[in-house]
Image (tube, rainbow, N blue to C red; front, side, top):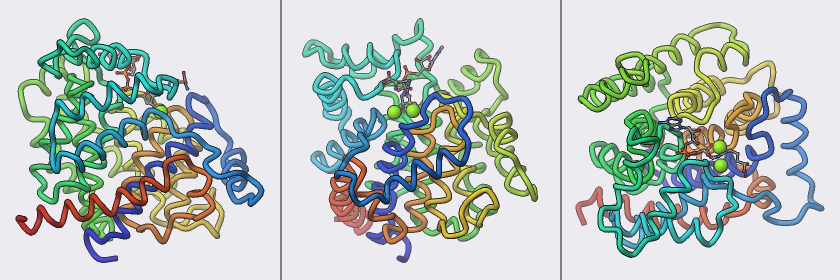
Length: 349
Ligand code: F2R
Ligand code: MG
Ligand code: MG
């Protein structure tokens, strides 16, 4: 499809769910042989398996709240979104949430709470969380707002409901920017795609809070920019091992160690790779590669899935995978509503 086509919206939302559901199998694993990944993925083609056998985790649970809030309020409403996060957690607490964020979600359920950003600010002795929980649910902002400055503004505010450290919410901005660009067809020119991300993040990371947080956490001055430069170096190498990707970019639960990694996976898998089956297209390659990294596989595959899905469109999503993943059908339907909202906004209606 062309830029911002319905196929790209469906691809982004559905492939994010798939990444979460299929990636859950290996979350936290230190080493994942590619053979195990391929075995897991080929089991999804088994017709005898029931529908929705792979449950989604917190990544999709929270993204669904973002989607429902954006659609119901026809825009960003922090009170509504916070209420939905709290309600979802209390209805289904066993989705594998981060151990810190649970405190925020419990506090958000208090009817006395007036400042919905306060619980997030109290995390980790007032430093706030730098986990990837804001980034893992950032993609719907790119599907609701056509304007780049809105995408950045609302992805940041949406993440700050749980993640007040700039290394958390800037990761959400980066993820939303990547989906926004991919939706426009920007992955047709990978070099330009990464340069644009670096230019945008240069500005995002130039503010006082970001520079201060980076200093306190002993990171580079603009840590996401620094990682994006590493992504660029890695994609320009003729050969790169999984071990090198993990040591250069990380595969962990921090946004800094997972959002640039997800972007790398998408870029690296634009072409066929020796370690992956020849009959795999780009979307399947991307998800398989994310799983083989081990570590935070559900979240890295979820974020890479959204970026890759926006590029390849829904036609690239295997039907059998969709059938196996809880929430994939809902994502397919919701993508159409988001597509309408996005185009209403871009027409100024
Ligand atoms: N939590 C998990 N996986 C763990 C295993 C779950 C298992 N399957 C189960 O069912 O029990 N996955 C999910 O969590 C990640 C997103 O986490 P989020 O929302 O960012 O949570 P949190 O608690 O805010 O941060 C995560 C951890 O990062 C460390 N951390 C963050 N900020 C910190 C700071 N300022 N100082 C020190 N540490 C900080 C803490 O260890 C937090 O617990 C996704 O992977 C999702 O899939
Ligand atoms: Mg998860
Ligand atoms: Mg995870």
